[in-house]
Image (cartoon, rainbow, N blue to C red; front, side, top):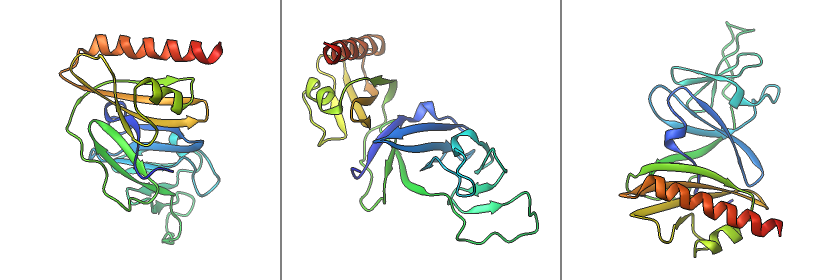
Length: 202
């Protein structure tokens, strides 16, 4: 896994919401507490393997839908409803990734060993799934998979495109703009998707 990967537009994960995301074949989830901080975890409860993205947020804790196990922002289990008097062992934890929010996007890292990219705030435009390999998508943008951010040639204003690999033949683009014509940029991205997908089907 690359060091830091943009996986969603921050706008698409409002306070109190969970969202499932697939990153390079890994099932992860994003959730945001009432404090506005985004968290990225493996989409699996350590109890019975239920998808945590099906759970619900209360204040700054995430509750698993299956048996109600509650996890704090630090991924530690806070409460097990079937055993209300139990002091939960610190070893019971969700599998958390390092998370950051910059440039209008939510980013994840396997370990957060290096700082997240520092990007200026920008207006969210659209997240778009493209049924084509990241290598083809980035080549069409005049970039490569060595960089987590690409630009959209010809877009009005400055349009930044974060991307992540869903699997070998599918790419997610997350577009933000500074002074960009949002409608024109969205149309240009959709045209890019159509061209790439038609080329893949040919």
